[in-house]
Image 1: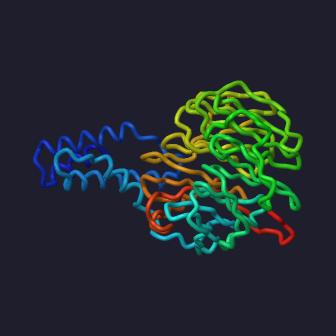
Image 2: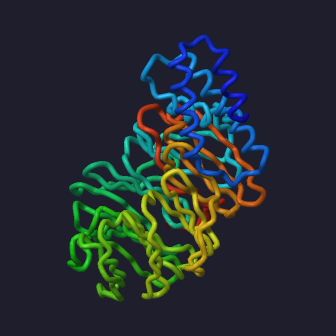
Length: 382
């Protein structure tokens, strides 16, 4: 829909001339500030038509001074979305935390509420979940059966790692980094290391047991928790937000307020990127997806001079990311539109679902705790 057509529609709408002019100016500004979406042409055309049509309707119904752009964002976000999530597009289960607690979402769309936990993450092989309340750490099965609890002050960011026969859980108690065995025993303040920033610790995948965390001064520490020794530490990077290993253990990504730092071994590569709120390595380890304000970008950690590729862009800020176990789908949350978007990497297919908050008990928009594991071995302890 071009500007002449839009002007014609506004001229025919039952509005005072001043309101018509205001609406046209707002839509022009929104169009000029848009971010291009790397979808097939049919999706881009459909969204453009929906956005312009919504702007006309919003202009006709809005009282003077109302923000028309907000209505355009809502209309674009929900236009082609399904209103219920009946199934996942790939195998595995999703761990979700909403205002009502922690949930497990199965591939067939069925949901189970685990309890009133504010954070949760999977055990290494998906047999258990570690969850946190304000002053409690708990290990439970995906059906909600609680195996043990541990009372500690200000519990945050529990992360579980290990082998089939030996698992450990790292978490923060206040600003202290703690480690506890997978059966809830031998909880310790790990090695007396410096105070931690409010960032989840990260276990390195593989047989070598290494744990990374960020200190309050922004240094990345990589520890051998068994020997209680420091393997290496980085220079300080102020205002850290997120820390994550690649699934092959080759790279460690640190997100700060204005940088993306990727360590290959101890060598850092720094990209100056403001506004990153979420990041997730693909199962292959060769791609890092990041949310930068309104866009999802794909970063090659082995090619620091290669410009990130934009996978998706929307109006309003995007939220969390989660890869399917097979690496074919990327789940992107869109809090402003109350939607989840499943993007298929090959072919650019998009599945959108709305009313997500309502489907997980209402209240705050849910956050993701991981898309885990096609099957769990019966021999697995974690």
